[in-house]
Length: 83
Image (cartoon, rainbow, N blue to C red; front, side, top):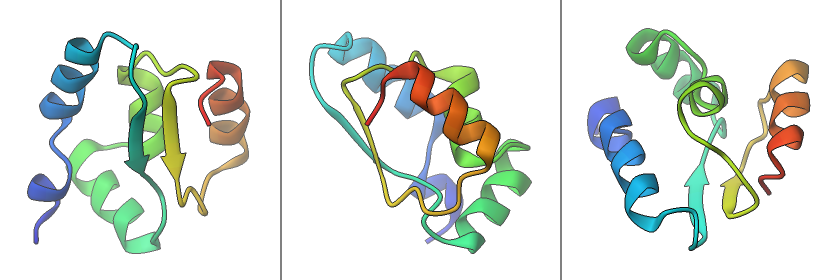
């Protein structure tokens, strides 16, 4: 599987618009170091960094396996009230 099939930025944006922040949004992020390396290559940002910059995160977002967050990502993610 390549990164594009695992993560399509336009699809994430489209899904968020469709659910209008009324339903839970479950995403696996930053679980593996390879995943972060691939995101940096593909998106020029770390996965959570990209989400913070491109998606209106809120309490309906559930980011799972976020085991490799930076301190800045952790602080900024907490501000969004995402789980």
